[in-house]
Each structure stands twice: as C-alpha cells, then as structure tokens.
Image (cartoon, rainbow, N blue to C red; front, side, top):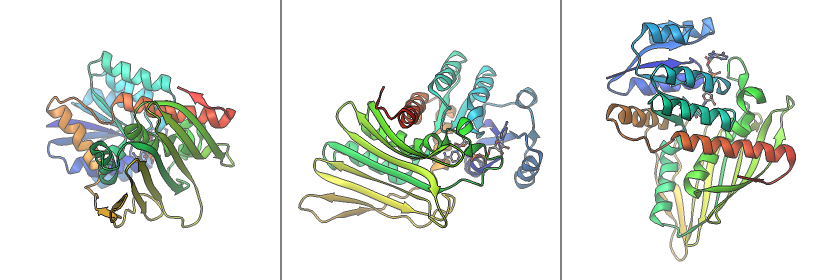
Length: 334
Ligand SMILES: NC(=O)c1ccc[n+]([C@@H]2O[C@H](COP(=O)([O-])OP(=O)(O)OC[C@H]3O[C@@H](n4cnc5c(N)ncnc54)[C@H](O)[C@@H]3O)[C@@H](O)[C@H]2O)c1
C-alpha cells in the first residue's frame, strides 16, 4: 500500500482521483487546495481531508507519493517541496514553463532519491500506444513523416483562468500542443530543429500553433494544436504517420471537451497493394493506466521508462523552442 497526497482539486485532479480509486493499494490520505469553495466541493464528493498548506499536510500525514495537479506555473515549486520532503512524485504535463525549471525538478528528485514521472498521458493512450508499437514493428517501413493535431474550444472551465494567461500556462502552444510534441518525440527520436508559426488570442497568448520538427534521422513532424476553435467545434485529435511501406491514420472527435469521450474510431493502416486494415486500439482510460503504471513502478521498485523527466524536459524544450520560433520568425536549432 502507498499513501498519496493529491495537490489541486480542479479538472485533472478529479480525473486522477477517479483513477486512483481504481488502483488497489492506492490510499489518498489528503488533498491540498487553496480555494475554499473548491476544497469544500471536493471534500464533499470524495470525503478526504483537506489542507491549504502543503508543509502542514506533509507534517501531519504519512505520505509516500505526491500527485501534482496544480496549474503549470506552480509545478516547479511544489515538485521541489515534495522532493525535499522525500516523496515520490507524479506531476502533470507540461513539466514546467521552461527548460530551466524542468531540469531543476529532475535534479531535485535525483538529489533526494525520489522518483518523478510526468503526466504525458498519450504514452498510455490505446491508439497512440498502438501507433508506436506498429512503427516499432516496422509495419509501415521506415518512418518519413508524422502529422498530429489537437484542437479544442477555449478551456474556460479552468476556475481562475490561469490557463488563459501566457505567463502562467504557456498558452495552448505549451499546454495543449505538448501532448503531440511528446508523441512526435516518442516516434521521431532525437529532435534537432523546430520551426513554428502561431496565432495569438486577444490577450496575447499563443493559442494556436503549427510546429514543424526535424529529427536526427530525417523524420519530419508537423504538429497543429490550439484551443481557438469556436462554437460547438468538437474536441478533435488525430495523427497520420507516413512510412516507406504504408500509412497509419487515426482521428477522433469527441464532445466539446475531452471528458466527453465517445465511441472509438479504428486506426487504419494503408499498405501498397493491400486492402486497408482497421485496428480497434481503444484501451482503458489513459489517465488510470498512467497512474497505475507509476504506482506499480514505485510499489515494485521498477524503473520508470515512460513519461520520464527526460521526456518531460524534451517536450518542454520543443514547446519553448516553438514559442521562440513564433515570436522571432526563426528556425530554432536544439
Ligand atoms: N494530462 C492532461 O490531459 C491534462 C488535462 C488538463 C490539465 N492538465 C494539466 O494539469 C494541471 C492542472 O490543470 P487543471 O485543468 O486541472 O487546472 P484547474 O484550474 O482546473 O485546477 C487547478 C487547481 O489548482 C488549485 N490551486 C492551488 N493553488 C493554486 C494557486 N496558487 N493558483 C491557482 N490555482 C491553485 C486551483 O484552485 C484548482 O483547483 C496543468 O498543468 C494542466 O496543464 C493535464
């Protein structure tokens, strides 16, 4: 059994809470929240003790794992506090607002001998895992290019609207886009060059981005991501991977946000001279699978190989290079 402290009680904290509830041996001992009404609602729903101070929580409760579901601008501070208190940590993506903070988080965990995993949930998402598996098996030959996209309406559900402020969330170019940047890294290998064009919202936040990445063995990735869609535009994500011997394609459209996940679409594989092949790769909830993977690694002293701090750092490196590229109109060499 492991005792867990949940930091935050917003959107993703609720998703994590549902995941933790399904994991045998995962015991949520308390949560941290600074907004009283939010704390009250969460406490009513889940009946777990509330703290408005992390040091006090860690002093009064026995905690093995801290789950950081706080706004991005707080990740560094709360990961450092938790690491210094000797707790293993799972921290939501984006790891941090910049590479320097992300590296400091990794170093603090190493120094204090605690594990750190970043919530890059696509690495646990059925259709993305399957794409990676098919690519690794050589199903479409050598990979030439990868296109991926993630489009949403503006995330107005965020309570204090920190998410709509570039300096607190990094805008969609960091927050939303990073899912596919990490997926591209997973498939593409070592990124060497980033060029991006973006669109700013009225508040100046870079909220729609088209990012091109070149990888060391020649793979090109083109990633589109943003939350400037309008009206009832459904949450949309997908990818198309071109190889020397075939194409893998998948698209998903949900309700207005990702929570309203509906029926799955199959992955389609196209190969020269063959009929299209459809694979249903839908799996259990990716957030649950991600937490379960992390929990099992901690419980059984296994090395974390997915969504590692290095994966988190590289994703932040690309997203911040994309932001620099958008702002200056230049290609950023990594
Ligand atoms: N993996 C995913 O698919 C996914 C999805 C959504 C969000 N996220 C990430 O999770 C993190 C949290 O996002 P969210 O959507 O849950 O946000 P949210 O605004 O819904 O929740 C954040 C919570 O932190 C609390 N909080 C504590 N201290 C705070 C402070 N000083 N200032 C402001 N809020 C404070 C807020 O009250 C709120 O309850 C972000 O890093 C975000 O990028 C990841």
